Image (cartoon, rainbow, N blue to C red; front, side):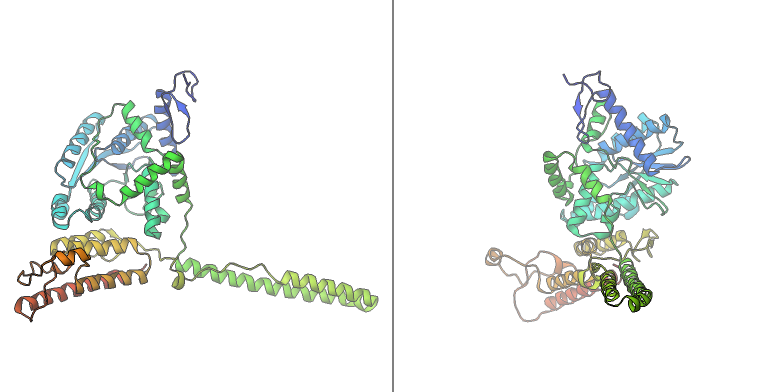
Length: 482
């Protein structure tokens, strides 16, 4: 039997993936809680007297977070005013059941509970959104709406901070996703234990260094009540591919997760202003170095002049040696050139937080993402808005974004691309009218070539109107700072 690595007395029941240490049940529970406490203290996540909202979904992460924060708040006397905050997305058969787990946790931990819903905030439930846009881009809507719903719920309860259950696995997945998407801005801050520290509602991640496996084991040993069913729309999420890759990587090396998180902590993205400043400083330092070397060489020659007159040929050799030494000093090491933002596109402009002109929500653009997507839903152009929003999230340079919009325009003008098999088996139907102004971005068959008619003219006007609306949105997004 393997003895516990910490106490050396009890029998070990598990091997920790982060340290590979074999530990017993009591030592594991205590060490897990104290490591979270160490993260809270090292990152200065909370301050005495603050009102902290715990984002509670009913899953393992949020349930363990509520239990651990309640325990540490009493054990170490944080002096925090904790409460649970849940979001009802309106997903039948999933969210209604998970909210029941949250309500039971409310009773177990004695914490107040506030529930906000998509229906109350946006006038749409997630089921209605998926029914209109399909399952391809549904996570884009849910992610944006959920983040804003948590912020609004926390502000309604006058919370000072919002604590989320994001763990080390989540952060490592986010690093990989941002790298694959080339998202410079998020890549720089995605591993921070607290985001928006200077904003009105900072977000804290006490589980930054906690492995998902250890969170599951903690919930198991503590017999916590949580909801374990995955969201019915989650299998189509882009994050799932990053998660699968990370799990395969973890099988080869268990410390891969924490290594990726540590790597993400050291990412530093240079802005245009920082690059220009670095180039200016490098040029000024180079000029000062040359001037200093020239003045030193002149002073050395003046000092050697009397000796040269007295000693003849030996002084000439000394002067030659001094000149050689001065030339060697005057040629500095080559300074690596910083690529310009116009050529490489590597640098970006760090956006400044402001307020949305429509809903007054915190946003780095004039119109926040939620309002852009909500406008698309209300106008029946949700798919088009989702594609534009994904371009905004994933395209780091203005030139690439413009080319994306160009491809979207071509798609609207000529219709969706079809394979040869689809073209062979497709029967032209010129009598089917356009159902809505957004028919040009749907997958309906292209009308066959026929003389102009009133229905085809109306369809062309609809396509032109949608194209104009699309380019107007594109110009709005392209006018923001990148």
